[in-house]
Length: 295
Image (cartoon, rainbow, N blue to C red; front, side):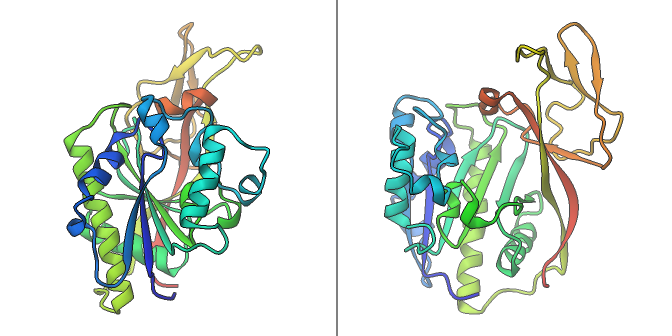
């Protein structure tokens, strides 16, 4: 892969996820993020939602960046319009001025420091290996099921983009441990890009444990679409712990316990994420994989 010339670090894509916003403020003194081999800029993605202390004003900003939506001028809500502005600022998608995007997010789920990769090419596999070596507690998740040009995440504007997802952190709160994790992971990613550019990358582990997104589960509903249950206490806070066929997964409000019916060993994450209640989503499920660094 060619050298990365320009990196954008984005915070505040969701207005009530505070860690990325406060790190952007910290990085106004750029010595912490500057690297000799590329230029870097910061983007405060959704200032109005932050001012309103909400995830978004009209629509989730991080779902507005497919090529089809960006080209549709009839999509003109605040976030839909804001997506088009950001696309012009650091894109446009498909011919972006920026080579690499790091989008900073918090989750209310107990996911720890998590690196979400949208592609599984050599660059991303090596980045995952490097981050795991520098930060052994980091979790690497591949969400590579959608081609970048069809992806609707902000980080898909550039040819390469990642999401730093760190939790648990309540909405509209700052936690030092979570902020420190995000700062550390972002630093390692920037170091990796610099070493990649200068051909000074250290020997990497040949393979590492990672997870690949497989499906999303909804909370139980009745025929009228009313929620009738919740995530079972045995699953709550156990992000990336195995879930097997027959394990308890939901408790209905009438006391009935629901068992998962699955034909694979699943690894739940984004468990009971507060922001996903808008869509009645309970959790994402992944499969554990061994990612080969080279290939």
